[in-house]
Length: 622
Image 1 (cartoon, rainbow, N blue to C red):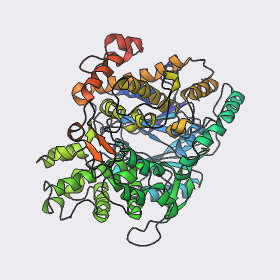
Image 2: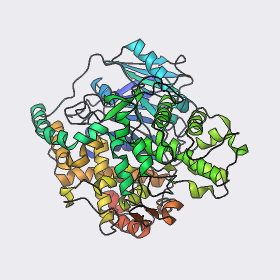
Image 3: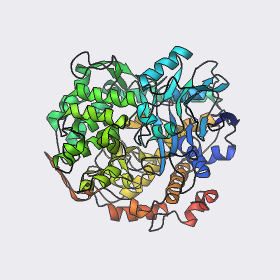
Image 4: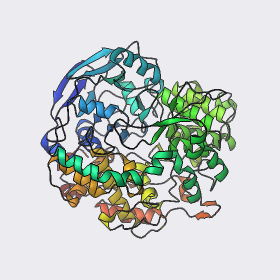
């Protein structure tokens, strides 16, 4: 069991009991860790009718064999559960300090079951685990809660907490880590699941760390040292400007969403909110995940004015610059930074929150929502003040509109009616991230088939269609984003790869600009675990995990009818300066994709496919 402690804490919140159990060699062999291992537990513990906000839905934290080792980008963990936003499988990945601290506490993961009748926090102090009463924390925002816990357990403590949005069971609530230097498990409403269990926080004190057992510690150190010069060179510009540095280039290419996905280009707006402008204006310094050699995040401060921040806070990443900037036609970087601060403080997914507000703004523009039906608010694009007020109302479920928008754009559109579904851009209930499937037909397939809904991290296809190659599968140069031939096969490979990375767990950014290859991850995995997997065996584990998650979703009612794109992506070309993109030919690509996956026409893995992946255990309940 090299790479693992083989210890998972099972916390029954109904009874207030804690038990340490092994992972087991078979599960480690079949699923590795992270999202795939969490999916195996979730499949065993839930059924087709399990209520995502009920006590029978577990909340699962898992690290992976890369966590807290010398493998680059290994300061991460996954949170897995059924989503209260979509009703289906969900996993959410977070960086920062918490995943590393959890692994060094001598645990590989946490499984929360049941629900407490009063607020509690789990305290992990070396080898001691206990439930702390948390009535004093309930009602506090993310920053305040982190401050209290660090005052109690020391500045070196790592925290995982929910804010008001999670307490109010808002389906787009996230789980936040590291206080005001916030890293989040953002998507799918994991914060609401945590809130439904009255679990306010998990804190790891960091005392008495336990090193991860490694099969070949010297070999791992030598391999990562050899790879580091190339990786640092390849990621130099990325680290200098972070994800915001890509914004203007994405606008030029046609990947940036504009005006709730209606516009083609917004060069002037993009230049006012991109990473270069941030570096020249509100940026204070760079920051990053614990012990990561690539410092790609940044901290910002707005010192005065209407959008003054509460001191130095985490900067908005590319996704938030898109969701609260170009999507809203807002070119005020200070306003976007404030919206990001409030999402972090209240514990809201900034992607879904911004997308839902853009949906509401278009409903208002088209007269589907009015001032009277918007609780007296004047909505509209280019209005950062109303956007920020909506963030607060969504988090606290305040007013009819705040409560409705917090349910997600799919549910809100159905309630609003009057054609509002045309303005909701989501798949399976999860709002789009800030990458356009008309630019990337790979994302058209992966958004439609992603196990948690519309998610760019399901395949990271746009990166492989812009600047990343994949020689291990014959992709010697980046793929053409709008070329149908071979696209389904590429997406299958990329989804399998991303499932692997979410099990190891490895940061996605260390693949950018061809900094690291899949062969690097395989080498590090074998050195950590002592296994000797071939590349084909390695990728097969990714395929197994992806298939299992699909089986969970089939059990929840997902079939081909759900593997679709929203109306806007089926009908509206993307047209702007130097770009004229047709809507993606999803349905023929989807049929090819199903054949490659070994799924039926209805989108279910065949009996032969289930057997090939060794998933017969899960077939009876799928």
